Image 1 (cartoon, rainbow, N blue to C red):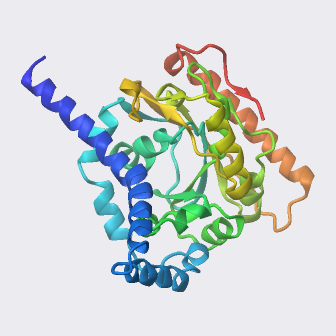
Image 2 (image 1 turned 90 degrees about the horizontal axis):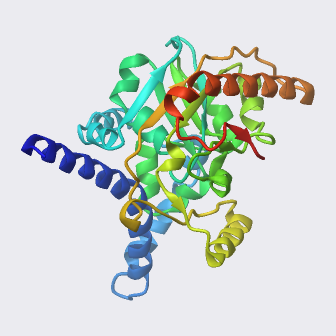
Length: 328
């Protein structure tokens, strides 16, 4: 291996390290530090003050942060480390149709996998995406519980991330400026239950909230399909892991994934990660859509998603055990 290739490999691994430091590390370490400081009479004032701040800032979960952090977000996204992060897999965005920057969109993304890395590498932190879709600003949505984690909540606010609560996403789209793409991982954490190498098993049958949202706001739906997402990690099928998942799902509607990746560590395997952005489905705005109208648009969306898979499976899903399935 040449010195140039070796340097590139090092940069790619640093990119992966940077991503997991900003996600997994920032979710876990500040929470551990918070609890550790709370146990000492000499340092407990710090987490207490922070708790007061969180209570004061509680409504930001529903209304968005009080600061304009768009410039900070753009600076973070343009860091060269994310280019190396994408090169690790390697990552690729496939454009099938133009997106009008004077309109807004709902990006319905599949599958979720462990981290939904294809969303981060190919959309959220991707310079290629910005070049392919100029004028489109992406907004990610996540579980409300994330906004209760110390420091992590501030990072989410800086990145413009919003709660996936239906009232919050509705308000965001109603007041959104032109050229917004709201990212929704439709299957959510539940899809992790069905994750296996060589499969694209989706949770979609009962997921109709994003369709209702599109109808109520008149926002076009864009099917987004990630190939390679389920190849990055192996699921740990241990009885204890299943029991913990059951309890957390009951308590907070969240099922923590237990997984291993490269070298038996929580590091993703090297596998081509391709995100195909489909054709927008125009949606007529209806204030109070009926169940029949929701079902009709849901069926239209499912057909468009299945067609998107059929059009690209032989290019990007060559190692499949079976074709795309909607299992729940």
